[in-house]
Amino acid sequence: MEEHRVRISDIAEELGLSTATVSNVLHGKTKKISDETVRRVSALLEERQYIPSMAGILLAQNSSKIIGIAVNDHEKYESHTLEDVFIASSINQLSTEIEKNGQFMMVKKTTDIEEIIRFASMWNMEGLVLIGYCEQDYMYLRDHMRIPFVVYDGFCERTDRICNIIIDNFDGGFQAGTYLKHQGHKRALCVSDNNICMDKERFDGFQAGFGDNAELMLIPMHMLKRKNFYLQNFDKLCSVSAIFAVSDYYAIDLIHFLNEQNLKVPEDISVIGFDDTPMCQMMSPQLTSIRQDVSMRAQIAIQKLRELKEKKETETTIMLPVTLIERGSVRRLDK
Image 1 (tube, rainbow, N blue to C red):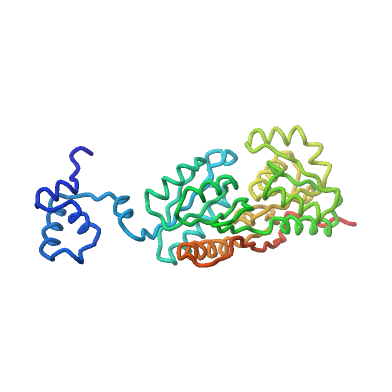
Image 2 (image 1 turned 180 degrees about the horizontal axis):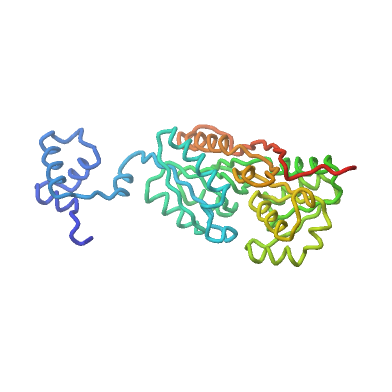
């Protein structure tokens, strides 16, 4: 089918015009072209059912009005990246803000940084929002891309020519630890699949709020391995009265495991999550969690992309507050 496709050069040859003239008509650049030539080119384009290359049109325009969203297709999502509640909620809010701004959104999940560069250049994007990558990735993209981008959910200490929108991870952990301590809990675990970057900040805050009897339990990323790990460390889980998970995903997954073992939340073990995704209120009991304002984060991300594109002076790091939302997954113990 491709070999029979009508090309700009075919239209130009048939009309005795240059390919540049036909291309300018196609892209709406007709100020220096006569009305008659515009009419002839337009008529033949329609007659020959010319199908333009969308990428070519966007590259020819000064503004594509496209904002790209690149999500790290990390192994921990087990091929369900865009189904993750936090990712889906973030993309939903970004879509709302992008549409308010009269722009369009394109989403790509990938672990390949080079793919992000091709993705952005192919569609002549105005900016990118990057979710879940590492600092070395951001530095590489900064040095190999001309378009502005914001770091939306990742760890990046060096922010020259990058806008990093973060949340107060330490304070979120601190609020969780302080709350459990005030509820009378004496021993607690923090479950995470790593002890670096954001998760480390959350555990450090949790330990600062709860005290020395807060311990980190490193768990496998993959669901089946994680379940086997919990079974192997079941006595340790039962030795504490409360568990703080560094994400709602791990908190909900843990609650399901505890229920399978005939342990009740919060009667036997209290659980707190992080992010306050919509799933928290669909649980029984509803999950206590650390809320981050995904709507505000999306609003700021699109605003900062606009400022970066217009080369305005803007903050390179913006920290948003978080708030503990009390629900039924934590019970008060007698002190």
